[in-house]
Length: 107
Image 1 (cartoon, rainbow, N blue to C red):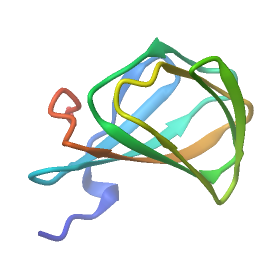
Image 2: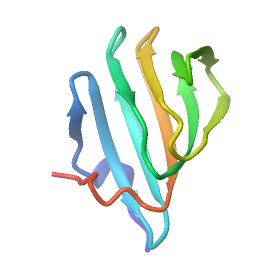
Image 3: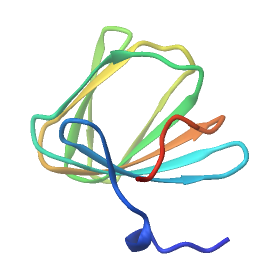
Image 4: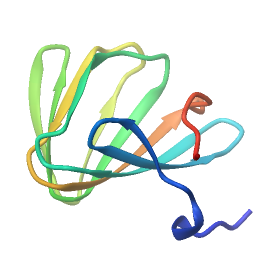
């Protein structure tokens, strides 16, 4: 299936995080536009996650350790690891999740 990102309706999952989601049988890709200083609270989930910073800079806290992830850098988050994040700048992020995140939807 081919789909244009521009044709996917965005959904603001938490304030400042506007996402577009593409689902496969076993994975989800999330395309985020994030406003500077927007925060994701501490949480965990069953999904393995890979975060790619396409533009900007993002502060990610994983199990109490802070990582600054800059443009064109990737980081993995293991299943059930507690993590949170803050956009240091306006950001464009891409998350890859497996298994898929069925709770994420495009409005």
